[in-house]
Image (cartoon, rainbow, N blue to C red):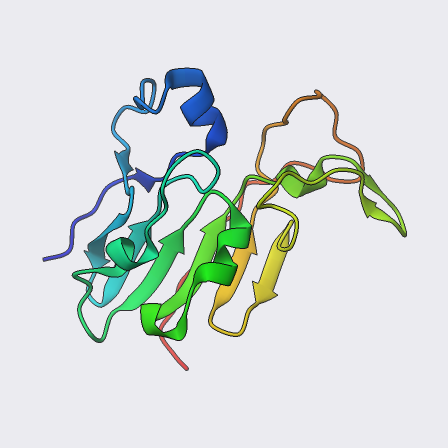
Length: 161
C-alpha cells in the first residue's frame, strides 16, 4: 500500500552537526538503507551517507515490488558508480557537490568534495541509470557562489518508455 509523506537522506553535514540524530528534521522520514512504496509501482529508497555512514544499496531496494520503478536518494552523487543493473534503479537524486560553488568559465569547478567529483551537477546517464545532482541552496566551507547559482529542482515523473 503506497505511503505518502516527506522523505530524505542524511548527508555529511547532518552527521557532523547533529551526530546523525536527525534533530531539526521534523516530519521527514529518513530513508537510510531502506525504501518505501510511495505510489503504485514507485519505490523511493535511500542510502546512508557515503562518507561517514554505511550506504547499502541492496538494503535500499530490498522489498521493492518486482515491477516497481526505483528512485534512489543518495547524498553523494558518485555513489552512482556502485549501482548495478541488478539493483534496478531508474533514477538517482543527489546533492553534496553544490555544483562546485565557484566555477570558472572554460575551466569548471575550482573545488569538488570527495564523492561529488564525477557527477557534480545536472543530469547524467550512467551505464545503469540516470543521476541528477542538484546544486542546492546552501554553500559549504566558504559563503561564496560564482557562476554556479543555487537551485531548487522540481522533477516530474511520468509514465512512458
